[in-house]
Amino acid sequence: MRIKLFALIVTVLLESSVEAQIIQKQYQDQVKDLVQNTAIQKAFDYILSIDEQTVQDMITLTEIPSPSHHEAEKGKLFAEMLRNAGADKVWTDEVGNVIALRKGTKSEKTFLVEGHLDTVFPFGTDVTVKQKGDTLMAPGITDANRSLAVVVALLKTMHHENIRTEDDIWFAGTVGEEGLGDLKGMKHLFREGAQPLAAHIAIDGGGLEDIVNGGIGSLRYKVTFKGPGGHSYGAFGIGNTHNALAQAVVAFVPKADAYTKDGPKTTYSVSVLGGGTSVNSIPYESWMLVDMRSESQEKLRGINQLFLESMQEGLEIENAMVRIGKPLTVDIEKVGDRPSGLANPDSPLIQKTMAIAKHLSGNDPVLSSGSTNSNIAFSLGIPAVTIGRGGLGGGAHSLDEWWVNKDGHLAIQQALMLILMQGGWI
Image 1 (cartoon, rainbow, N blue to C red):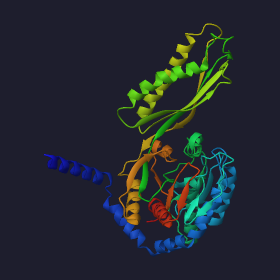
Image 2 (spheres, one colour):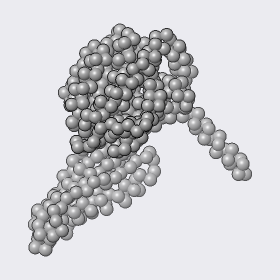
Image 3 (cartoon, rainbow, N blue to C red):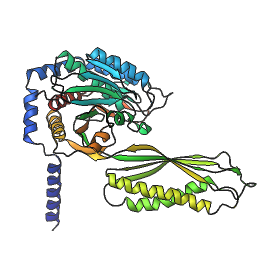
Image 4 (cartoon, rainbow, N blue to C red):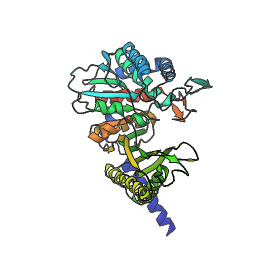
């Protein structure tokens, strides 16, 4: 009985694995034809020949501080790199996105290839790149300064080898991807009335086989309870904002726990708390930052409703105990709103990406959802994918972030092939 059960489990797992990674033959054949093309082989050689400069570009960009909302200085240097790489035109848009145009032979459509300019690290962080053996270490070196260097190398390669797709390409460095940047650059590029973008290739991840085809949506709030404040003894009886905040959290968490036990993965976190002045003072203000995420937009809306109801519940409970003075108030500010979405594994862009990754890495591609710049395109039903920046790296969002140039050029070759297949070169 145990043998039969084990065999059944193995069969199910194998069938699930195959189903998750089916690559249609037409795309595998396209990749095989592409890599045998003399022009592509020359382009691959050129990518290798500029590898040292690509790494230096990554180092140069890493050492310019660029917290979200403060990307201008890095953007100026990145724009100069794109001009030197052979862009037909370079500009910075209203929100700070740096965009380089490579004109197509037909220019009937435009698609976007980008990495983001911002990092999670505040001003004052030491972003000097240090080398230990073959390892480069600095905050932000992989996320996403390596990606920016890849974007420059792609444009440089296409210009040097005189390769043009039928479609126009925007090679870009975008703003506001991290944290409270709230995908500012992407929301601007895909806003209503903007120039239509037919597809989006984001470079922001790890290995070749790691492919993001889904966006994890998130809602983020800053909730601030406000009151008169006063002496802990002399003003006793007025509303206490800490109590209201605590009551709101206590009201929310059990509901959120029950709601997130079933269905698509949905999470919640009361992440940062603040307020108060001294031990002998009733606080006049208490605030918290809250993060909620889900792969499902419907589930995200559901937990959001529970959250908003709980904030009012906490306020009402504390106000019911107020003996003197005015009732407390609450200000609920939405500080982040990232939509969710999913690209079908059978869609052409995802199929192309998987076929290329399988050919270059020799490994089965792994599809996953994440919170990246592609979220916006995913949510709008526009073809999109997030692919890796290559090499080996770790410690993202930490002071110990590191990167090793182990076959880093393969990521550039992967991105180039995807651009050509998507842009109508073949």
